View 1 (spheres, rainbow, N blue to C red):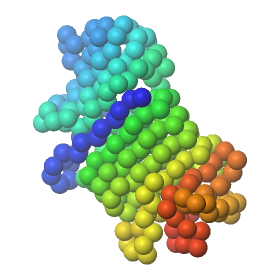
View 2 (view 1 turned 45 degrees about the horizontal axis):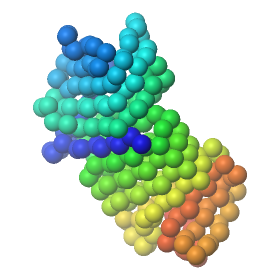
View 3 (view 1 turned 90 degrees about the vertical axis):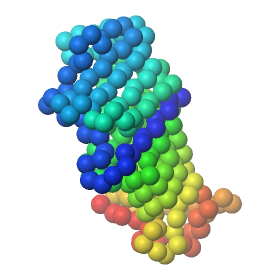
View 4 (view 1 turned 120 degrees about the vertical axis):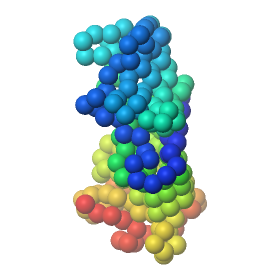
Length: 234
């Protein structure tokens, strides 16, 4: 199980790391069978380590990626990924992008069961194809569980949990907040998913079933509290 930890830098707008694709280049002398480093013009960098790494004209072609570290232009860690065991030849999507000062996107399509942790700010956290454990941390997070049977904890802040009508697996939200305040959490689904949704209360919470391949159990919730105001419909 891989572990992903995002650490927000202190400060206001622009404090989060942005890797500039247009200037990102290999650092001379760092490419080997055990890893490589790339930097952009600002000095922000990504270092990948592994075993038996091989390269082609378009990047990694083989070997096993075991860790990934991203640093901002000041040299401070922004994302530290450990305990990976990822076939480099099928590393089809792994990106870290930041936008506003309170927004960081961690897109982790690894195909494994992962632990994904957000920062104290408002993060966008995206799960992979297997059963992940996603922790939002502080701030108003946007959490996309994606495929697999995921366990999601939003943490503090007014979080939004995104689900598809089909193909998202059978997930669990452990800490949904519904207190009738501006700090309440929301569930984002399509109008079609809402129209077909079946609400079932059990001994530990409420099960929202959108289809045979997508549902979410909301721990500690009650069916009498489920209303249109708890959802963001698209």
